[in-house]
Image (cartoon, rainbow, N blue to C red; front, side, top):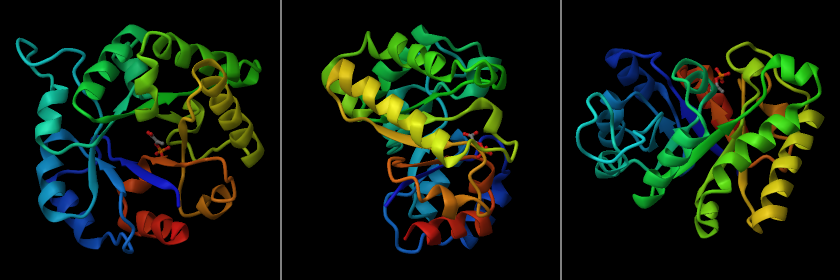
Length: 238
Ligand code: PEP
């Protein structure tokens, strides 16, 4: 069974979150992760069976960091996973390798699993440098981390051009890139890392994507905000 992680971004207001929780059906599947905006974490904890994740964490610990949320605070709300380095934040908040390393260290200290996003933009895909880009994104962070902690990290391969566009790589391309990521981490650190695919996963393509055995799960944006889409993805995964 694949790990399903929903990234709801800032899509839903409070009423829409409650409606989604009412309509969603996890089909008895345990360990389905939802990453809502911070204000809704408690709602998901109290009203749903989702495992709760976060979309971001502070680079720093508790203290004088107005507007941030620390790993310790997330942990105190029973948050088990946290997305790190989503392409929207790499672009808009200029998150770089050092910042992502700091976030991961903080999360691991509080037993929250980082879901570390990597992926190429369209121009990089067209120039045939997808693996170079992804390899650099992984190594600039992993090289500095304690090798014994790498097992607790999940990598999400998210081609930037596939996010929110309805476009996806072919199954062969996803399989090839996932192999590359797993082999890179295995060869360099002797760790078997889990890899999720993310980018326009929906009820239209999930049955086909499910055929890629090497992919350990999905990071799902838009389709994780619509109960009918999410229910279908769950059912196809049972
Ligand atoms: C994402 O933003 O992580 C994502 C995968 O979005 P979408 O599923 O909407 O492409």
